[in-house]
Image 1 (cartoon, rainbow, N blue to C red):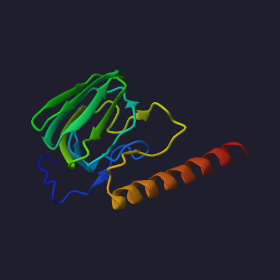
Image 2: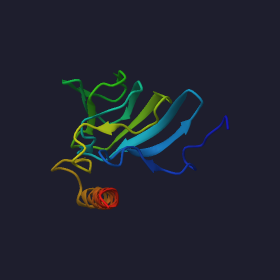
Image 3: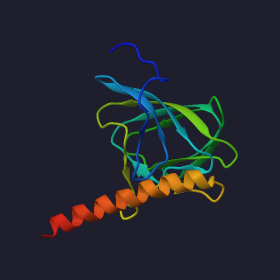
Length: 155
């Protein structure tokens, strides 16, 4: 389909095992393009993916870490994440973030968390209680599914 209305598209989690990123995106043959948000004080734990990514911060500020380099990106800023770079993006404590994402579609939207022994997003001390509750519930559900997979493999 060549035309999309983000207001009517189904919202999805983008990296539920390590991030609070949630939004809508369209998948093309060679790239994906979307609008993602992160609640204030939350974000992704360090992760990587084999596809290149660009982020345009539309609202708020993102604390970015790419291969150990850190910078807070203001509204209107652009972030380039090279393929396979270890990175994390966390909304500042004072407001939610909305950003535009563009990635090549060789891999998809989700990455692989650096520490796979942990399931769950970065939830800072300033995150609202309802946000912490929502993503803690998602993490517990993911941990439960992970445990079930392990026990099936060991049988």
